[in-house]
Image 1 (tube, one colour):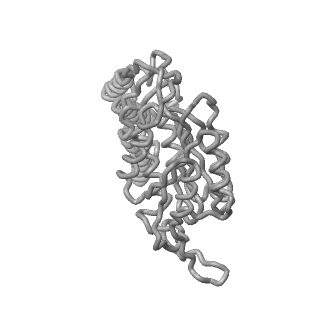
Image 2 (spheres, rainbow, N blue to C red; image 1 turned 135 degrees about the horizontal axis):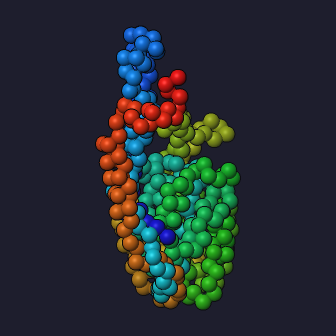
Image 3 (cartoon, rainbow, N blue to C red; image 1 turned 135 degrees about the vertical axis):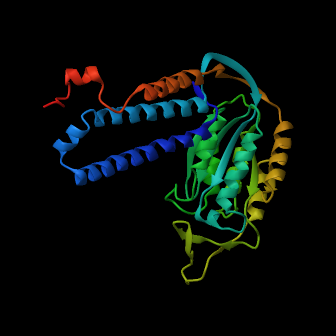
Amino acid sequence: MYQLEEKVWFWLLLIVPVMVVVFLWTVFWKKRVQKAFGSTVVLKRLSPDLSFFKSALKFSVLCLAISGLVIALVNPKIGTKLETIKREGVDIVFAIDVSKSMLAEDVAPNRIEKSKQLVTQIINNLASDRIGIIAYAGKAFPQLPITTDYAAAKMFLQSMNTNMLSSQGTAIDEAIQLSRNYFDDEEQTNRVLIIISDGEDHNDLSTEVAEAASEEGIKIFTIGVGSEKGGPIPLKRNGVVMSYKKDQNNETVITRLNAEMLQLIAKEANGEYIYGNSTAAVVEQIRDILNAMDKKEFEAKEFAEYKDQFQWFLGIGLFFLILDVLFLERKTGWLKRLNLFNENL
């Protein structure tokens, strides 16, 4: 197992392709100028030690040196020991609404991005709880099974969008039903489902399914994202609003937060409804709820004793940097005598 401590330094690797473009352009420009100056035979007589191979080799060594130094700045780490860690926590499943209504911009920047912000901040404040992720619109689909890997959870979370599911609509009942299969630990006394949605529900089964989930020990907490005033659903192309979604009568559709539905679902499952306008308030409220619950002890295998590996890449970078200084762009005498590339013919 490995870790990358300072990933931001990877951006410096963009220097390498820029250097390649500049190098190739310079070679092309030199060839054109030299061709205008005289024939190839004349140029070889005037500059017998000029070697394109040595120039390309010197440039390649410089690129390797820069790459090695950049990776050293990133500081890769390798886990050297696998340990079994005992943890105490709650199993939490996040069900995130990715229907088109979540594109409404009545909350900034829009409902779907606000939902992702809320879940990310909740995860950042967890300690040892296990988490899973479900995406739902007209259907519900598993995104991440129950895990302690918060980094993977946030990666899956950021990739979620309203285009990921072809079946449109909002079927909260399917998300609740799917979550019942997520909790695979029968000994876990506290199972939590957190639904993040604008509350638009296209059927009347959600409360019945929520009650059935409650009987299995699943507590459902709902977070409402949106406003009662509502807003239109923008249709964008390349980030630019082209129009707004319209109904069969060619009237602009206005989608509104249905807090009553979310409150009813939470009530049926011994949970609580939370208005998601303030990220800080939501995170604090969820933290208080989880802290008040009984924790179950479970085991998880984790890599420990991560050791820095930057010194290897630093050494490689410095090695190639020294080689670049030592290399000359003209032909080497003993290589010239070997005539490996038939340059004297």
